[in-house]
Image (cartoon, one colour):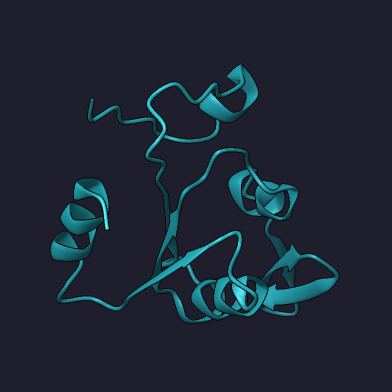
Length: 110
């Protein structure tokens, strides 16, 4: 585990935090659970952004019958306002497009 991941895990140790990566077989299930229950999700080793995160990063939240819903893949998931996602990478030379930079808060720990 890299230092950034340790820092984040220590910061959120009193709250519920889950750790995953895009390579994890249960990534979609973990993401949907974190969005639904309002937990913090730490996604490690993000070299490129998975398009499944676009509706979340764009805040494409639909209000239907008193429920806040967001589309994750083909599924509509209840969106908790407490949900937080943290994307980390070990690669200091990662190239992020201006589109991504405008939708996230970028912190460079190098």
